[in-house]
Length: 472
Image (cartoon, rainbow, N blue to C red):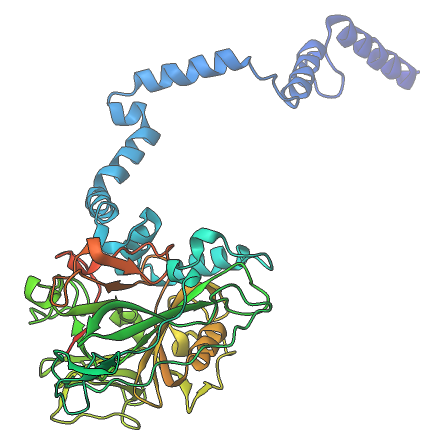
């Protein structure tokens, strides 16, 4: 009976709690617990984003509440700080882009500036990428404007002044009568035999291709320079490469320094060519790479500017103006008669054959500027068995093409000179009188499409070293 009354009382109590909204187990109001559960469920759902206009307005308001302009415009302020900090860089780069001594084109000037400021590797990579993705055209014919103007004319042969072997007045017979003529003095210089025609690489040959033509100032009335053109191979037939042949018995060589290369001046012979020197100037052409890329040395006027490297390809000029080309310490070496030595890489041609390592893409051998597999403007110079100098320069050449052209021109030893459009340049001068001054007006480039004009060697600010050949 007591248990029944207890159970009844509990049932009545639960009913009472339920009636007032209290949970029997937790003694908490049912409404409160339900509200809390609802809040937890509601808080677990992501709140919807306000519209974009509202978000932007809030950001603007936060920026306005910041006290300083820097706080209100952090990105613009950071960019301004960077621009101001790099002011010396912009000034230096701007000066380089307006400096013609660094190249004819803006890309060339920018490349020179970048190399000088630690970006040599970047420039080498960029140039390789550009030229690798812009290979030379295959097939086709060269434009008429690319062919030198002498190509359509007949080739000339060496001639001597009208004189007897002894220099005595010559005689001639006219209508059975012998008359005396006034003879010029006997020439004191004996020229080398004229160069023989060259066999073109491409077939059929173009008109005048491989045929030598005399150009430039005569020396003692005799041609001292001959030029011709060839296409570099049988594949790239729309490109024309210029070749020049120099009679070293009639000409004397000289190494001129530039305003930048090799540094360490002043020197007696430096750009520009003086008025006095211009009265005997016959030709001028580019030298080698920048010295930091040449992997060689520089010696002139009894001064070792940069130590000469054993085995380096060397253009050697002696005090009497004669020239030799060879590997330093093997073919050529220091003697009291050496006036100047300009080194650039290693020999490209030796014993009348291309060097055996031309296919190796090794920048430590063929220069840091560009890998040897790239087709670009290139130049080179060699010496023949008779002692004549031969120069090759033109577009669309890799290192193998350059070597083959030098061998075809008769070189027994040869070296690469400078490369790229802005730096490959050769000019000859032909004033109206035998001892007239060489000027840009009477100068002619080896190829019509060379960007360096005959004026180049007469600029006082010209930065790179070069060679001249003058009448003896």
